[in-house]
Amino acid sequence: MVIEPRIETLSPRILVGMRMAMSMVTDRTSELWRSFRPRMGAVPGRVSDGSVALRSYRAATDVFDPEAVFERWAGVEVSGHEDVPEGLEIYRISGGLYAVFQHRGPARDLRPFRFFFQEWLPESTFDVDLRPHFELLPASYDPWSPAATEECFIPVRKTA
Image 1 (cartoon, one colour):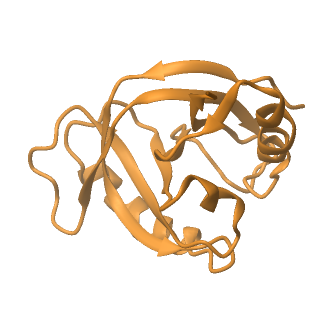
Image 2: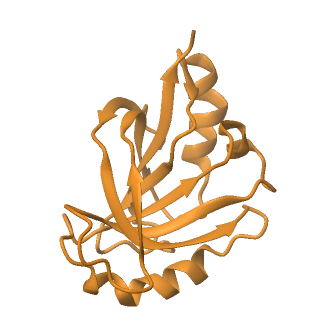
């Protein structure tokens, strides 16, 4: 079941994690998470026991291009950025207006994203903005599980 997104203004956030360049065609998400997951517990100042999956695009329209290269981050939100463990990096999310919805089911089920981009967005008074897209993942998150739940954040701006 697809849920109507809510519109929310987020404060800036700080992530500590790892990144890789990829496209939807050259997806290396599993490789990235295999590298980062063993390091999560060593990150000081975590604000929760969950994690963050983030995509940073070069252009707002790259979201619709499966060959467009973007940066994929696997990280955790932190309260500050002192003492970043070696081999990990900081990413600052500037905050702003986001459309937020719940995704339930395995990560490969793209129906909620299709609904958002193909049905909800064209009928709304919003456009996709050029800021990071991200998902908040609970500590128990299993991307293969039909019971998986994640909260998805898509940056938006009011149309002119």
